[in-house]
Amino acid sequence: MTLRYGRAGSGEPLLLLHSGVCDARMWDPQWEALAARFLVVRPDLRGFGETPYEAAGPYSDVGDVTELLASLGLSRVAVAASSYGCHVALQLAQAGLVSRMVLLNPGSDLPATPDKKAFGAEENRLLEAGDVAAATDLNVRTWLGPSATAEMRAFVGEMQRHAFELQLAGEELAQVDHEVTLTLIETPALVVGGGHDLPFFRESARHVAASLPNGRLVELEWAGHLPGLERPEEIAALLLDYL
Image 1 (tube, rainbow, N blue to C red):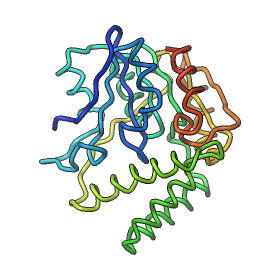
Image 2: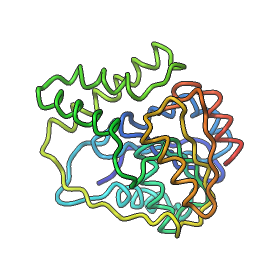
Image 3: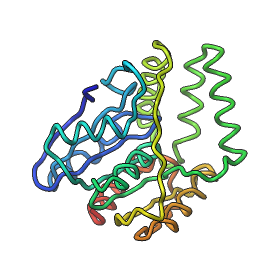
């Protein structure tokens, strides 16, 4: 599988990994600022954006991304990742491919809390009923904090609905997951938690930061789950400052 990706800038490589709600376009607000300093690469994972949802057999997102980096001649990259993208970033770091990383609202292997279970159950109910519009609205309401504009809410809705349509149009794919051992990942990491995110993700950000040997936690009280789309300039500055 060749992931569709965008590329801009020059210098040290920086990989941008999107959340499971969005696609690579979620980095649009930070794209110019980051490309002025780095060689920036942002792929669409399978079933998101411009990458089709198809596979001849079991696959892994980290395998796809590793293959993409190899095809670009990139053996080590800085990474900025959001939500599900953080899981891919940690797998890359465990494989020794990451120099440093920013993890925006990562999940974790902590037990699912009632809020996360309730969200998953409602999303599944709506999708099983064929109500993609309502499932999309649920995601927009859940994942964006109060700082998000109406324009950004519509943008996230567009990306989420497109992902649903891609993934529901085909058969469910078999994905191979790779276990992550946080305590063995020595990559320097800034872990960002959002004060308006679900409790599961707030707890996960603290857990990930505390478990990584070189992790540091920053909690943004104003932020929901997608701070880069809520206060884009602040997140651009945060990324540039750390990376």
